[in-house]
Length: 346
Image (tube, rainbow, N blue to C red; front, side):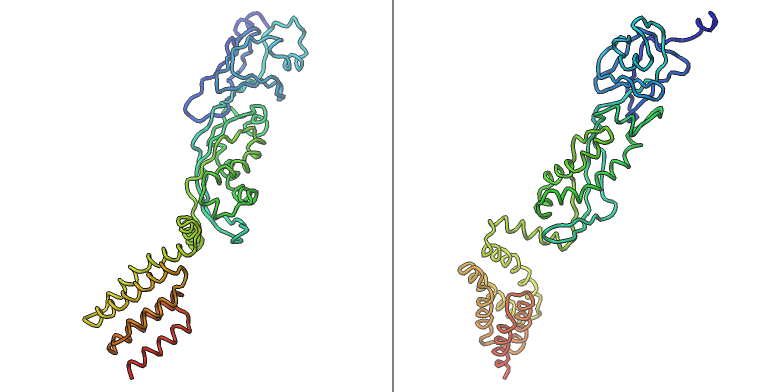
């Protein structure tokens, strides 16, 4: 090299990188034809890491701090370069900076229902979405497995892969827990923790730490959601089936009375009154005897039928058929009461 070429040659005294707002995860320091000055300084800020690469091989890795670049602070590079202790010349090496801060509010969600296997219900299809946070925990592994020699690698470049990993492990999270899915669906915090535990090893293979996972919504099939609602209702009454049936009957009375009340004229009002009395007796019987719903309903219907006109008898039969359809009256009880009511028409 001529003296003039040596004078024109530029040397880097300070290596540093300030992260912008573009979501950069890995950044290759622009070297061009420049060389790093022996004894120059390297500044690695908090939430950063720096990696020196020599001829395609990762050499030294630096965490936060300020470093004077010498053979003592670059032991691996010194070995690769076969430098002796007196080395004091400028040198060339690729330098990569990595952002190690948490990448927050990254979104995951099912584009199509995911089928999972549950020990109570067999195959269950669900939709779910939430967010997660991660950070680069191993800059060397991330460089080797993900970012490589690219000048810049961003969170957007990685999002699709990480969302896929999250969705892939939903079934694993449910299966590994051994907990019935309905219990997990009622406790989204526990479900999120299981999902994090299932997906974290795959993140680690990429040099990433999965710091947090949240589940914001679980959409179950309609029939399974009804079962979950009933389970919650049972929890409200402490698992007492008698109290649960009382609760269901109390919820059904206004709807039945409303349907009866839609009859026309005096006959409709009479039927509504008769049905109201019958349902009142059903509720009183349940409050006193727990699950003995059907006998109370039948007795109430018989009492209400006494002295009815033909159109009232027919209306009462319709209401008894509705009670049978809802499972409150058995087929035998309905047939017996129907026979009694039909005698009123003779």
